Image 1 (cartoon, one colour):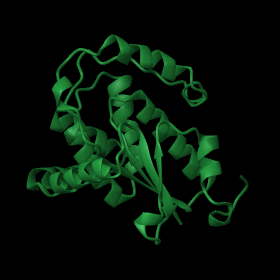
Image 2 (cartoon, helix red, strand yellow):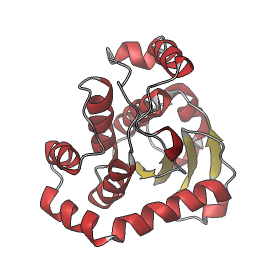
Image 3 (cartoon, helix red, strand yellow):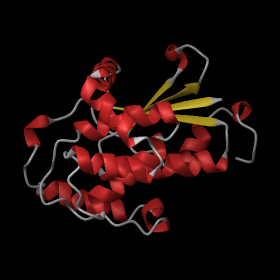
Length: 206
């Protein structure tokens, strides 16, 4: 079993593309890849700020990527960049349910296609319910603080690995030492992901 840990930001178009590539990978190798979503160190200075010119330009560039075209992606610029921490904590909960990718993709769609404010708890709970997560249990865990502790540990580990931006990943054999995992920085296409995974780790056609 291969485990891929991804640090991503729900307002980052390339984190969106990376999540799509990972979903494609898990469908290509069913029951052989586990994906865990992890929270990066977030830049809180830009919360409730209008997207910059470079941010909007990156949306246009991201749309030209093959996986964006393959999925007929919509990437509308948010009116304001919001606090994404609730979504990060909820993604941590989704890991426990084996729903990290469906939840992350639903959040991205809410942000870039539906202009949903994911800093609002009720919006996040509705997204969770859409992918068959237990929204009431998620609410309890959000209010208890247990998910905050886990996401803060994720952010600390993001810094420990020296990652400078998202998406960032660790790829390795699930039951091996974390030290054996390969760190990957930047958007990695589906084809590049396939090449990064050792041939003897998966059954199926590369």
